Figure 1 (cartoon, rainbow over the protein chains, first blue to last red):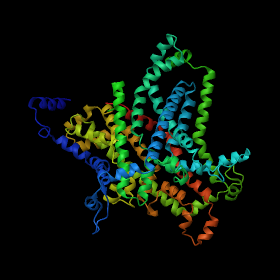
Figure 2 (figure 1 turned 60 degrees about the vertical axis):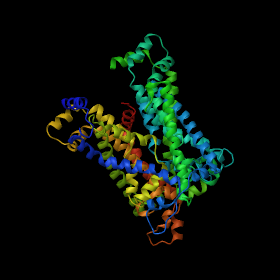
Figure 3 (figure 1 turned 30 degrees about the vertical axis):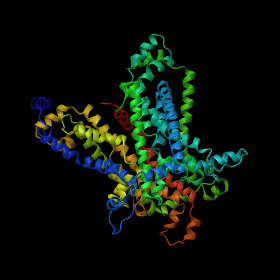
Figure 4 (figure 1 turned 180 degrees about the vertical axis):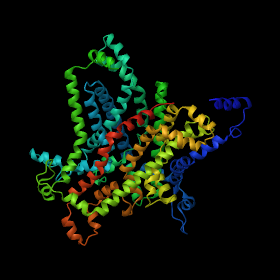
Length: 327
Length: 305
């Protein structure tokens, strides 16, 4: 602690710029952080310069040069790539799907998680509650590829379990992978199913952290269980709730690619308008021969919007309740 | 504690009927989460002919180990993919722990001169990223990692979220006095990090390690973007590939059978489900033990400074 004080005191007394106060300690810490620093620069900051791609008409230049050379020597496209993306018939569909699915996900997942956590915390058999939590956590650890096999086992038209039940009851087989009216529900259901254990456990962790004397005092004053939940538990989990909400709002233009692409069975044409999101659009464009500039424009638009929504959500929260903002 | 529970329980308990309703609700939810495993497993042990005639059955009418026998016969493909999965998971997890804890330690030092800069450097990617395409271009065109195991490992090796978890942990649980006294004894920061801080930070290493390990084991997305070479396929990408092309293994016969014979002898449906089982079982067997580290990580991560 003594060392802390002397450096801090030094700053105040002499007002030296930071590089003059640079110590051996700082050098060592810098070297220690260097690998991670490089990782951040390469894998998070370098892609930010990918913005340029969206403003270029990327062409291979003669002479077999590398990507950056080709990019820099391609002609500027201005906002041409963006114009192309915004006016394409996919754009409104993608925007609608991505946002509506996310809104549904946020509302349903949050209510299931909070409701489930309240119920779990008030259960009398603590052992049973632990077992349920563990079982409900399982889907969280499954990849979407594996989940797509579960879904396939249930829905494949010829042999699937669900059509098996329908025909056994005398109904008609449903061609699940060709009928897009069912998929909004299937997608929302799967998203809830996969994340519910995780969500409940997070809220449960903050509920178990609440001081039990608060409840005892409430009981003394004759509060019912519902009143306790309303006035003690819910206010206590509010910070976590708000944080999750802000983070979710930041993801409102993103989508879980595996859910929309794998689970639908590589997004067949029949489900294209129902289950396409920005991510599936960009992925399919990467895999196809679409001009890279147009794909970059879509990708950049998504990144800007995500950034905007997370800052907006944080701003709104800071206006309502400055305590709970995260930035 | 026991006394408190007792008095709390008698005074403040939900009604027995409510408790029963809650139990039923969670029993249904819990079964919904686990039963797909049973579906997949029972398909994998059903006789292919029975599947063809009756569709999938929860309780197979005709049992068959043909799918697992087939996997055994194709063990070169399966084992190679399993080996790649394990290799990527192990190497990736080690690298991930090293990168996240070292950075977490550095930004947890209060008098590090670049602390402010670093905090921003780590924060900005949480809010803004270059997007999927730009990351793809960096990994495949600029770094040239196509068809390399590093394309599976490096992009997932670090995250602002994990660094933040480490920082919060080091700040709250590693006493400054230990570090100061090590410094007085002449230890450099690298030694302090590796020989003093890490050994007393096993919980956070377990948390970060688990996040990384499950992330790597479950990853198929990186592989689908960057890996075309079938020798480098992991189990997940094999499964993914098979969904794209059910006859994948039939296209890679290493025995003396012709394509036609292979197709005839291959119990495709059950084999695919059997491979899914091969992926699921290690996770299903281990996650209950690591669950608590996940939870602690998530709760540490949500602590603000």
